[in-house]
Length: 101
Image (cartoon, rainbow, N blue to C red; front, side, top):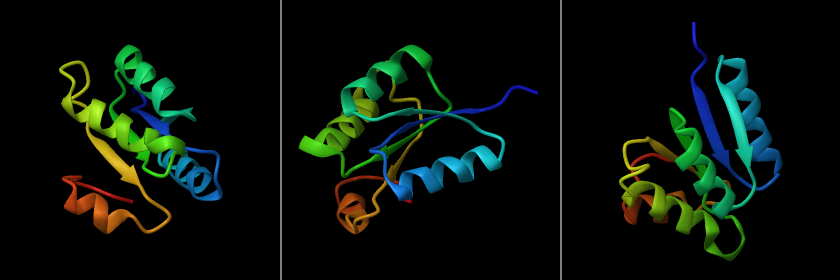
């Protein structure tokens, strides 16, 4: 059985580490990138089964990564879930985000 791959684009925070451990405990192969730019590059190259994006990355890079991933023909087929530990989840949903953790 092939493990499903999840790309996490998140700062190194306790919340992100908890999500990573949870996904791994459920049998997912988790790849972590800590900037929006490196995360977008990894999504294009690796074509993961799902991407988890932390919207609170510095310099809005989480929002920029989310925007690119959902609009680019190279990645728009990949489901994107946002991680928003600081409470921006409601704003994200208003902004068109379909799923938030």
